[in-house]
Image (tube, rainbow, N blue to C red; front, side, top):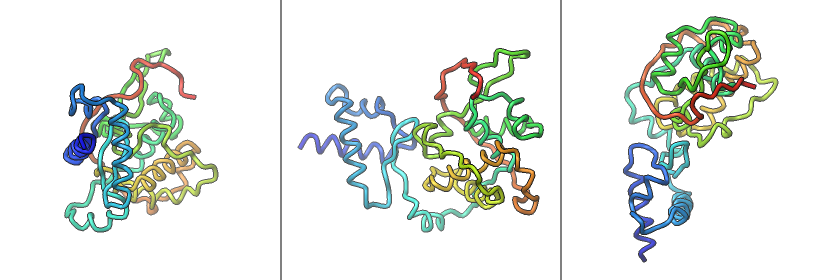
Length: 245
C-alpha cells in the first residue's frame, strides 16, 4: 500500500515537472525513505502502466519526463496557432557535423562543409544551447572545440549520443530537403517524433560529411529563416582536447 502511494507521488511529480527530473531529484521526494533501486523499479512500472496511453514516460540525457506520443501529434498540432520557426540548411549541416564528429573545431567544420561557417551560425546554435565549447585544441591558435550539450539530447529526445542514428552509406541527398522541413517542424517542442528528427539530423550529417550538399538546388531547400533561443549544462568532460576521429 505504501509502495503504491510512493509510486503515485513519483508519477505526479513527473507529470507536473516542466523539465526532465534526474534520479537525484526524484529521490528528494522521499528523503531517506526509499532507495534508488525502488525509484528505478517504479519508473519501469510507470512506463508499462502508460504503454497504451497517449503519453509516455521517457528517459533523456538529463532525466525522466512524460511526453505525448507521435500518434497524438496530428491532434495536438491543431492547438498550436503559431508555426514553429525554421532553421537554415547551413545551421542544420553545422549542427549535424558537430553531433557526429565532436569534439570539432570551427576550421574542421568549414573543411567538411567546404564553405566558411559564419559567427551567426555558431551563435544560433549556442543561443539555442545545442552546442558549447568544451576545451581548446592543442595546436596553433588553440581553436575552440565544439560539442553538443545535454539540452541538445533532451530536445532530440535522446538519452545519449549513442542513440543517434547511424549514418547510412548511399543515402539519397535530395531527400534532405523534405526531411529538413520535417525536422524543423519538431525542434522547438519536446520532440514527439524522434524518428523524423534524428533521421533528419543523420541525413544532414551524411550530406555534409560526404561533401555532396552542393547537389541540392536552391529550390529544393528554399530560403529558411534563422531563429534563436536559450540554455543547459554539458555532458562531455570539460577541457577535452581529443582529436575527432
